[in-house]
Image (tube, rainbow, N blue to C red):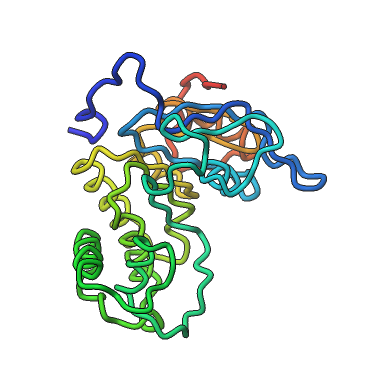
Length: 263
């Protein structure tokens, strides 16, 4: 039985975990997002797919409250974007810290609790960080220097950092960048296990269309505007992808005649 099949039905009147309404963002002459709208219910696994420059990362930053839209609005858990950081875990696309910085994996995970680098890790913080590392299969990396971590190991540590507070919403911006296929598959399975245990909602930006079809319960096909939102089998059809990407040839995505769903 899939993760989605185990989810309880949404209760009448329950607010969506993610609410995006007519969000538009322009950077200079570029219209990055154009009247993007969708609602995501609790317990779903949303894959956001689209070509480079489609606005996927910008959309995640709008949801986090890091980018203010020119028009429209975004809300998480019924609150303005950015108002509930304690309920959100975030894995960024770019790991911007200096890899030579003298810190260990457990210290990086603790920054998910403190939101800053710790001068000294307290025992309760270390215990929580170790539990998070164990959940993502990285307990053995706890005291390893960040400079000695491979790309896949670093991704696991960042995921542990995102999960250390047991957030109700996990946002991941292309978490598989720089890792191989097996590491990417393991990451998706770890997220599914976390969802099954906690009932959390997951939003993941990805370029892997096959992984999106296999792991996600909802898909958002984006290229500045929404080209499809709904069940992956419905909206990741060849017609939707051709419209969003501007070309065909996604041979690993089975052709369907499913209808497109627009906001």
